[in-house]
Length: 170
Image (cartoon, rainbow, N blue to C red; front, side, top):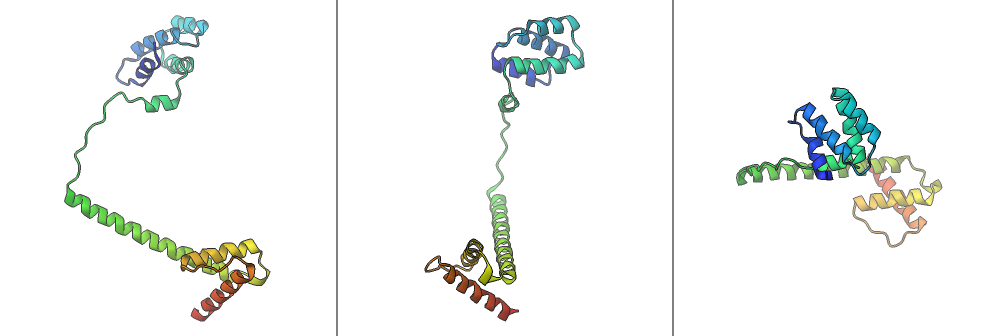
């Protein structure tokens, strides 16, 4: 019994449980990794809900079937869905685009506010270079400014100027 056949048996929800148990017993008997003691055990004890769950586990193990294999197996064809009309689609697309633009704008405002709060709390002269660099480039990126170099004194001067302008606005 090949792997696809075993997966189809495992995923078949319409099949009678006793019949499924019998089919799984045959699959276990024909598994690449054989365990004759298990086959004899299931043959001897027969069907029960508990034994059905156990044999499913053992068949998966014997045929090396993972959860990914089961999820990837498609037994039924996908139903075709009618496409929405063009008018509805256009209005929905516009709403989605407006929502995305609003979210981006709010996100940018929040980021700028958080950077400004961080700047207000920072002791620029005593801060480490990497902290200064991160904040300076974050602010410069938000307000579209380029630096002539990445030297600490240039970045400190920029942050000091930004801090003064924030104090003047308040």
